[in-house]
Length: 279
Image (cartoon, rainbow, N blue to C red; front, side):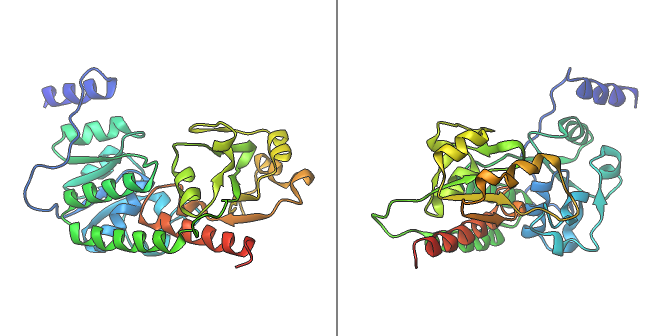
């Protein structure tokens, strides 16, 4: 008992690395829990409800989660190791970028922990969905979801030889996404050129109001905001200098996490592009 407590303390302190890997067992895990919103969505899409041990409280928020309407009645966790250990799960989906100490404790306690990453394009989405599905014993469901995604991407393809209009995804305080991001991949798949990438931004960062007004993207894309969550940081999006720019709102739940559902953001943007082109 004291030795195990020492191991857990060392992991939390960062003194002992925990091995977090795809489960080696041949049989599929019976019950699976999630520690992360992005993992929640993959879990709910890949497994039937009776095999979901718990999801995070964020999974039920429609402003954040694509599967909010499918998690009613499921057990909810708040990211704590103790509640996961008491929740009768034998595999946990976690993020490489959050609650790493919790994931390490769970791994040291004997649970299989499968980490997910933040995909930056559709190839990465395909690879991650297949890897997670293999760990969950749900490869057929993964292929069904990916076929739907790929069908939507093909349908969104712009006609050849047409100059892509520029589009800027601009969020609170001028936060945006440049080259090498999932947002960039979505814009390109929908037939747009990413205004932020064209301006030289790589990864995530900020563009000033002056840069946007001077460069004038053909389309300004703002996240759909919940009316009950006002924020002063959103006021920049309402600046009078932007009033003449065409604008569309896309729900953040479609692309805040990369998954098969991200194709829906492409579909909506491609439809708007066709309207802009007079189609």
